[in-house]
Image (cartoon, rainbow, N blue to C red; front, side, top):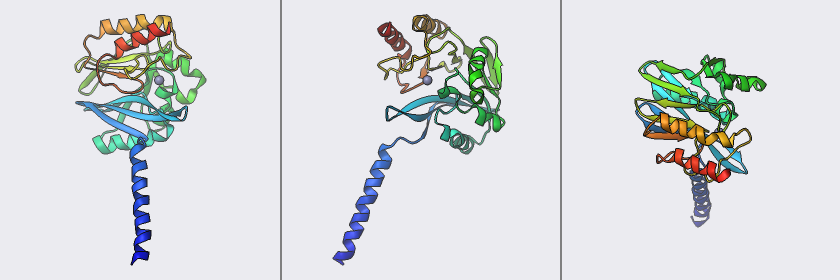
Length: 243
Ligand SMILES: [Zn+2]
């Protein structure tokens, strides 16, 4: 009996170890309900050996689901579409990219092959010229108010910052600001990837967003957590530190 017990114990401790390692690893795709019809989804890519999170959003409307940016992790395009279909039983009817970097646009071709209309600003569209696989199919010219089913939102270009083309999305009824990579999380101690940034233009751009979209209930940054409402002020602090 003892001889049999020992391998069983080994198996139990192995399973325990597996369970622990499964718990400590982030899921490849994390979908978080924000409020009402709004969801934030997060995918990861390794940066300096650690999984680095990238946030995007989707909105469930009466006419289908609108995505704001695509997964960064290219293995998560289909899992995201499948999860949206399973949770909401609605197709994705539109995707809008908020700047040309791949953490916003990696899934453009995938979406186009799946019949989803993809859009960005004209500037983003032009900047994607070198990466046709990431270029949206269509563009809008200037700030645009869009109504899909029971929801309305507006795109706003405040000027350069993280990139020369970064836009934000404002949901006026719910006072949700999707800041994308223009806005840094309060968890960030620095400005992150500034390869295409315009540091001197960034603060005026943030101030324009603050002035235009008063008292947001949620501010969603491109990376890391979104709890608290201080992300815009925090971004100003980080810009000041970097100058
Ligand atoms: Zn980014």
